[in-house]
Image (cartoon, rainbow, N blue to C red; front, side):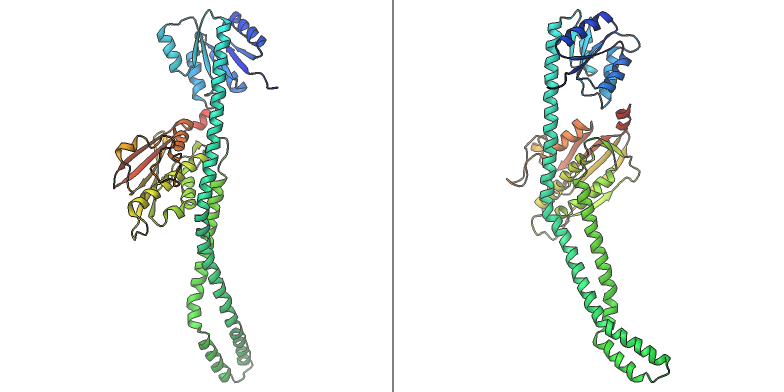
Length: 416
């Protein structure tokens, strides 16, 4: 049996509170009571009620101001607020909706109407929660799809340096097997010289040995083989670390994130998508503040942007092109926002479809190359979940720039 829904009743009139609480309790709801706007905020933060019945005219802080503050805090922003008011003039009703209220109930109220409106808004809240859960599942599915699509490219990226590390290791092993006997003869020569013996014959034989094994070539190539092996292992480590960060950056709670690091990780994860068609230019603001966000979802948005940029370049340049295009990734601190720009010198987006690119299932890619969900999901993540903006500028044949702006300082709202 599910727990009863909690309804917070806030009214400075005790009679109204008692009437509402008694009737709603009899209908199976759990009720909490407050007498002013400040109590409404404190109790909403502490108890997270399913719905709030909020009087408009109260001492200390009226209902409009209380609602504004509730909607400004991530912890309480989604709680439906139904205003109770004896002033049903259009101006008051308009203000109620303007501050974030979802309905108005005129005083003196009828309990049948109150219960009906509560039931409707609880149903809407349940439907909204289901949509958000579905959205989360779609994001996870898209992330898993992206990881699956990237797996072959990542395997290739790892295989290449692993192969020349293996080749260099075999070269070093063969070289050591050649040098070991010669080094043994060097030691014998030193012992003979120290003992005062005749070294000329041994020295000539050792010189011939060094000529046979091409010592000069070994001394030239040995450091190069070591450097290449170290570089290859570092490349493998970078790719594996990036893939691990990308795959596990799906925390359910918002937290402060370094967008520069997220972008660098995504560049490495997607390297097989862009490396053959583009040079990547970074212009990161090293002083960019950390952003309060779902880092995994933002990384997925950035991945979609980079992959789309690579696709646009491939479309413009064609397969097997000798030249490369440019993908430029920029971060900057823009007032109250952190800004990320993803620019490419690709084919561009025709004006007639530019307004549709964020629509669900809209895609210009061939069947099997895309589902049309990438930019739609990006818009929902940036705009609806993070209260940011995402915009596009494009010119056919010249290129495209997507600009993402995420608000700074939201962590203060989360703990307030």
